[in-house]
Length: 207
Picture 1 (cartoon, one colour):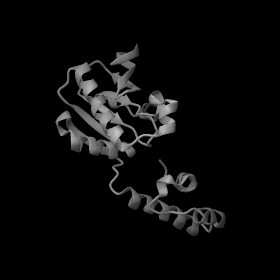
Picture 2: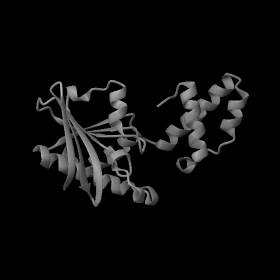
Picture 3: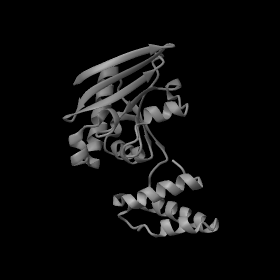
Protein backbone atom coordinates (compact mmCIF):
# COMPACT_ATOMS: atom_id res chain seq x y z
CA UNK A 1 0.00 0.00 0.00
CA UNK A 2 1.62 3.22 -1.19
CA UNK A 3 1.00 6.32 0.93
CA UNK A 4 3.00 9.04 -0.83
CA UNK A 5 5.88 9.52 -3.22
CA UNK A 6 8.01 12.14 -4.95
CA UNK A 7 9.98 11.74 -8.16
CA UNK A 8 12.96 13.73 -9.42
CA UNK A 9 14.52 13.41 -12.86
CA UNK A 10 18.00 14.69 -13.64
CA UNK A 11 20.54 13.81 -16.34
CA UNK A 12 18.44 10.84 -17.51
CA UNK A 13 18.33 9.55 -13.93
CA UNK A 14 15.11 8.93 -12.02
CA UNK A 15 15.11 9.10 -8.22
CA UNK A 16 11.83 7.94 -6.71
CA UNK A 17 11.18 8.48 -3.00
CA UNK A 18 8.11 6.81 -1.56
CA UNK A 19 6.51 5.75 1.70
CA UNK A 20 4.89 2.33 1.71
CA UNK A 21 2.98 0.51 4.43
CA UNK A 22 4.99 -2.61 5.23
CA UNK A 23 3.64 -5.02 7.84
CA UNK A 24 1.68 -2.29 9.62
CA UNK A 25 4.39 0.40 9.58
CA UNK A 26 5.01 3.24 7.13
CA UNK A 27 8.48 2.72 5.69
CA UNK A 28 10.54 4.75 3.25
CA UNK A 29 12.37 3.62 0.15
CA UNK A 30 14.37 5.37 -2.57
CA UNK A 31 14.69 3.83 -6.03
CA UNK A 32 17.44 5.18 -8.27
CA UNK A 33 17.48 4.32 -11.98
CA UNK A 34 19.18 5.39 -15.21
CA UNK A 35 16.01 4.28 -17.04
CA UNK A 36 17.80 1.52 -18.93
CA UNK A 37 15.71 -1.36 -17.58
CA UNK A 38 18.60 -2.78 -15.55
CA UNK A 39 18.14 -5.67 -13.09
CA UNK A 40 16.61 -4.58 -9.78
CA UNK A 41 18.73 -4.61 -6.61
CA UNK A 42 17.47 -4.29 -3.03
CA UNK A 43 20.18 -2.78 -0.80
CA UNK A 44 20.03 -3.69 2.91
CA UNK A 45 21.94 -1.13 4.95
CA UNK A 46 24.16 -1.73 7.97
CA UNK A 47 24.00 -0.55 11.53
CA UNK A 48 21.35 -1.36 12.42
CA UNK A 49 20.45 2.26 11.85
CA UNK A 50 22.75 3.58 9.06
CA UNK A 51 20.72 4.37 5.91
CA UNK A 52 22.83 3.49 2.87
CA UNK A 53 21.68 6.07 0.31
CA UNK A 54 23.38 9.19 1.74
CA UNK A 55 26.52 7.21 2.61
CA UNK A 56 26.82 5.72 -0.87
CA UNK A 57 26.22 9.07 -2.56
CA UNK A 58 28.78 10.82 -0.33
CA UNK A 59 31.41 8.23 -1.28
CA UNK A 60 30.68 8.03 -4.99
CA UNK A 61 29.21 4.52 -4.96
CA UNK A 62 27.09 4.52 -8.10
CA UNK A 63 25.40 1.14 -8.20
CA UNK A 64 22.78 2.54 -10.57
CA UNK A 65 25.30 2.03 -13.38
CA UNK A 66 24.63 -1.69 -13.05
CA UNK A 67 21.21 -1.97 -11.41
CA UNK A 68 18.00 -0.14 -10.71
CA UNK A 69 18.69 0.23 -6.98
CA UNK A 70 16.20 0.26 -4.12
CA UNK A 71 17.53 1.77 -0.89
CA UNK A 72 15.16 0.81 1.90
CA UNK A 73 15.39 2.44 5.33
CA UNK A 74 14.69 -0.44 7.69
CA UNK A 75 11.96 -0.19 10.34
CA UNK A 76 12.91 2.49 12.90
CA UNK A 77 15.63 4.06 10.72
CA UNK A 78 15.84 7.22 8.61
CA UNK A 79 12.70 7.65 6.51
CA UNK A 80 11.15 4.73 8.42
CA UNK A 81 11.73 6.23 11.87
CA UNK A 82 8.86 6.72 14.29
CA UNK A 83 8.80 7.34 18.04
CA UNK A 84 6.78 4.24 18.92
CA UNK A 85 9.25 1.94 17.19
CA UNK A 86 12.11 3.71 18.94
CA UNK A 87 10.50 2.96 22.32
CA UNK A 88 9.51 -0.63 21.59
CA UNK A 89 12.52 -1.68 19.55
CA UNK A 90 12.50 -4.16 16.68
CA UNK A 91 13.29 -7.84 16.34
CA UNK A 92 15.26 -9.75 13.73
CA UNK A 93 12.08 -11.65 12.89
CA UNK A 94 10.25 -8.37 12.14
CA UNK A 95 13.04 -7.17 9.88
CA UNK A 96 13.17 -10.45 7.98
CA UNK A 97 9.41 -10.23 7.39
CA UNK A 98 9.83 -6.59 6.31
CA UNK A 99 12.63 -7.55 3.90
CA UNK A 100 10.42 -10.15 2.25
CA UNK A 101 7.46 -7.75 2.07
CA UNK A 102 9.59 -4.94 0.58
CA UNK A 103 10.89 -7.44 -1.98
CA UNK A 104 7.35 -8.42 -2.94
CA UNK A 105 6.37 -4.74 -3.21
CA UNK A 106 9.23 -4.19 -5.64
CA UNK A 107 8.40 -7.31 -7.64
CA UNK A 108 4.80 -6.17 -8.01
CA UNK A 109 5.56 -2.51 -8.73
CA UNK A 110 8.30 -3.16 -11.28
CA UNK A 111 6.94 -6.44 -12.71
CA UNK A 112 10.01 -8.50 -11.80
CA UNK A 113 9.97 -12.22 -11.04
CA UNK A 114 12.99 -11.86 -8.77
CA UNK A 115 15.44 -9.22 -7.55
CA UNK A 116 19.09 -9.17 -6.53
CA UNK A 117 19.69 -8.77 -2.79
CA UNK A 118 22.74 -6.99 -1.34
CA UNK A 119 23.46 -6.77 2.39
CA UNK A 120 26.17 -4.58 3.89
CA UNK A 121 27.53 -5.25 7.41
CA UNK A 122 24.44 -5.73 9.62
CA UNK A 123 22.44 -5.92 6.39
CA UNK A 124 24.51 -8.96 5.40
CA UNK A 125 23.17 -10.82 8.43
CA UNK A 126 19.60 -9.82 7.62
CA UNK A 127 20.03 -10.53 3.92
CA UNK A 128 21.51 -13.99 4.38
CA UNK A 129 18.57 -14.98 6.59
CA UNK A 130 15.96 -13.58 4.18
CA UNK A 131 17.61 -15.33 1.23
CA UNK A 132 17.71 -18.60 3.17
CA UNK A 133 14.02 -18.39 4.04
CA UNK A 134 12.76 -17.21 0.60
CA UNK A 135 15.38 -18.10 -2.03
CA UNK A 136 12.64 -18.10 -4.67
CA UNK A 137 12.50 -14.27 -4.50
CA UNK A 138 16.13 -13.62 -5.39
CA UNK A 139 18.42 -14.14 -8.37
CA UNK A 140 21.43 -13.91 -6.07
CA UNK A 141 22.49 -12.71 -2.64
CA UNK A 142 25.55 -10.44 -2.37
CA UNK A 143 27.27 -10.02 1.00
CA UNK A 144 29.48 -6.97 1.63
CA UNK A 145 31.35 -6.99 4.95
CA UNK A 146 29.60 -10.29 5.54
CA UNK A 147 28.86 -11.16 9.17
CA UNK A 148 29.69 -14.72 10.14
CA UNK A 149 30.30 -14.86 13.89
CA UNK A 150 29.73 -11.34 15.20
CA UNK A 151 31.18 -12.21 18.62
CA UNK A 152 34.45 -13.46 17.12
CA UNK A 153 34.62 -10.47 14.79
CA UNK A 154 34.06 -8.10 17.69
CA UNK A 155 36.69 -9.88 19.76
CA UNK A 156 39.22 -9.31 16.95
CA UNK A 157 38.34 -5.61 16.86
CA UNK A 158 38.76 -5.30 20.64
CA UNK A 159 42.12 -7.09 20.59
CA UNK A 160 43.26 -4.92 17.68
CA UNK A 161 42.59 -1.59 19.39
CA UNK A 162 44.09 -2.78 22.68
CA UNK A 163 47.26 -4.10 21.01
CA UNK A 164 47.61 -0.92 18.94
CA UNK A 165 47.27 1.26 22.03
CA UNK A 166 49.94 -0.79 23.82
CA UNK A 167 52.27 -0.76 20.78
CA UNK A 168 51.98 3.04 20.63
CA UNK A 169 52.54 3.26 24.39
CA UNK A 170 49.32 5.26 24.63
CA UNK A 171 48.70 4.72 28.34
CA UNK A 172 45.54 6.81 28.41
CA UNK A 173 44.01 4.80 25.56
CA UNK A 174 45.02 1.49 27.16
CA UNK A 175 43.31 2.50 30.38
CA UNK A 176 40.10 3.55 28.60
CA UNK A 177 39.95 0.32 26.58
CA UNK A 178 40.67 -1.93 29.55
CA UNK A 179 38.07 -0.12 31.66
CA UNK A 180 35.16 -1.25 29.46
CA UNK A 181 33.91 -4.80 29.82
CA UNK A 182 33.96 -7.01 26.74
CA UNK A 183 31.87 -10.19 26.81
CA UNK A 184 29.12 -11.94 24.84
CA UNK A 185 26.71 -9.11 25.72
CA UNK A 186 28.93 -6.47 24.08
CA UNK A 187 26.07 -5.27 21.84
CA UNK A 188 24.11 -4.08 24.90
CA UNK A 189 27.08 -2.19 26.37
CA UNK A 190 26.99 1.41 25.16
CA UNK A 191 30.20 2.32 27.01
CA UNK A 192 32.04 -0.45 25.18
CA UNK A 193 30.49 0.58 21.85
CA UNK A 194 31.64 4.17 22.28
CA UNK A 195 35.20 3.16 23.13
CA UNK A 196 35.41 0.60 20.32
CA UNK A 197 34.14 3.13 17.77
CA UNK A 198 36.49 5.85 19.03
CA UNK A 199 39.62 3.77 18.75
CA UNK A 200 38.83 1.84 15.57
CA UNK A 201 38.44 5.23 13.90
CA UNK A 202 41.62 6.56 15.53
CA UNK A 203 43.73 3.49 14.72
CA UNK A 204 42.46 2.79 11.23
CA UNK A 205 39.97 -0.04 11.80
CA UNK A 206 37.25 2.32 10.66
CA UNK A 207 33.74 1.83 9.29
